[in-house]
Image (cartoon, rainbow, N blue to C red; front, side, top):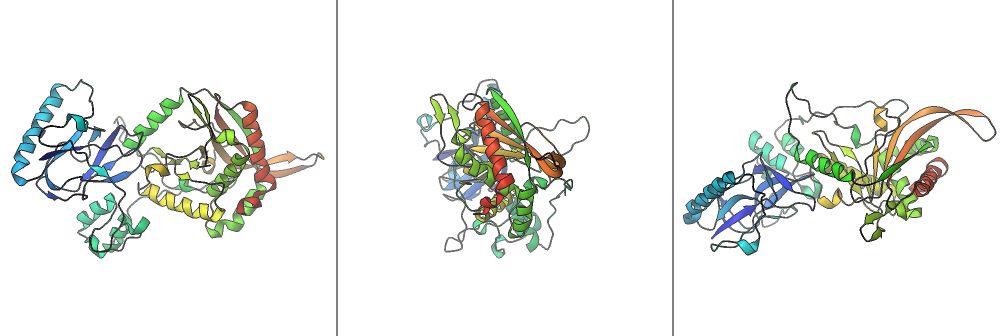
Length: 432
């Protein structure tokens, strides 16, 4: 039998994928469940495993190129004798595709499989390290590539990644090299107190003047989401919040690994408990009140694009568990190892540009959410109290963008008022 390999859908929003690498060469033996290629989806690189055993007969879409979900990207032949037949089919498919380039592609389904066997698509499974009898080695796509380039045997490396996964840094250490990944250190203004993952290398890649650089898969996903957001009627409300008490708390718990990003996410989450409408979603049938408070944090990626790691159940988890979860999300976001539910399940988003000295900005509402909070930097401000006495306090401006179909101005203002109350008067409640 001859089996087709289709471009798999790695997430509900994925329409096309980029092949990072083929882990097998044409003619290589393939076992069922073995990784045959690595695909870049909207946000992450994923190992793609074969449904069937046989031989990788031919590759139609090479590494580095993109293909729509459902497109045939290669063939697996069950026996060596069938390899040539599979290659002939690939040639016919390539010729047919070139002749009908303007015809929209309809993804094949099992119902239209040829007589030689079912149309078999590769399946995506989350790799888990197995140090037992199977002898399977789990490593990130970049680690595998580096191992080949540096002539390092992955079997000799103990992985430090999630669940023991071998990372690129593990390979570099094994080869006696230090990481070559550039990290740009952004020095925050003295008035800014919001350290976060966004302080890593977030400068967009540069290119020679006059050159057009194609969007990568992540950037394309951002474009689709932003365009979709334009169809939603939104409004913005801004509010100034005094941050002295929050800064004092931050200095005390920072040594325990708590970042300001986590503190702000926690403050937003506990405030959303009082304002479930701000955590809700518009649907054609009405307002969907989400049963969990999942705070998504907008993060710029070093190679372009935007990702929103999600702190799930942020209201109910303690601040130190949230901090550990955030660090784990950050590490795996850098390595493009986040699973779809770790960046697509947010019910409320925060976007923070305070570390760049930005005083105030408006954020675009993500699809499927009711509100997003834009956080500016803190700045010393002269403030008069009720008695008319003046003092200098650190203040930040936050601006909420809301879906006006379900949230009105009074709702947004009440939420911001309660958020300010937590940050200004009771920040220690965030550690309980």
